[in-house]
Length: 313
Image 1 (cartoon, rainbow, N blue to C red):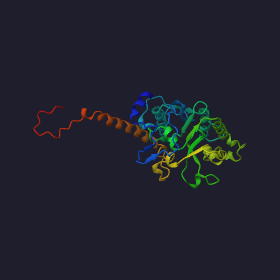
Image 2: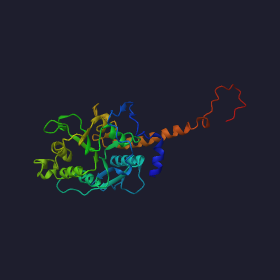
Image 3: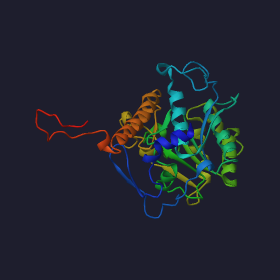
Image 4: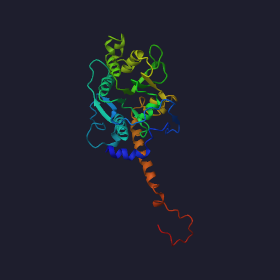
């Protein structure tokens, strides 16, 4: 199946060596001078990681082994399938991990230790919430890493939240959204994730216990505490909200989710979006097949005069 998927998308894969890209909305994006560095595919060194503590075995859910009823597919399932599809298209590793529940903190905290563990076996871990999706399945993650100036020294990258007061920490800085994370393997990254997981103990970061169950949980713990410990150039990279958070329908033209769309306002939007991404591919392939070669499927008889008796069809 993974081979078939790669072959279906192969004609439309964006060249990793290209310095520019035209998004589906017609806007042009160009890798800034001096930031193009991810010139080789990462392959299985990169893992797309989904984490959830729920069983996901009900009708329409990803781990239900029965033939799916398309009308009952859940938004969470569509999100997982988008991530899985993206990994197959580009030859990345993929894993959906059912994490154990914490007894003392909100369920979203489980992503932190799972990313830490995945970094022990992969050079790059890309985590997404189930309501986040890749909008351009044919665009390699390596190209985006160059666009966002992620260097080999970058420990972690996340997208900013929309510019609202409730999304700011006590110093007035915008929080970074943990629904889309790119993390790179290193001893320092392991130390950072360990400190993040243990932040609510209050030993290193007094007051972090507030975020055990209070929104925004692990996101606030990172934004209020951890990021201030990493000040060296390139250690942390913020991704523009417009590139990696939000969606066009939220009404914020600076957070449209051009490359990674996060449907925190309407989680079931992933369903139609997932179907559309596959349908668009098949329409393009069918159109391309029609034109290869066109004279096999199309005959221009407009120059003939009636009555016609010598046209070979």
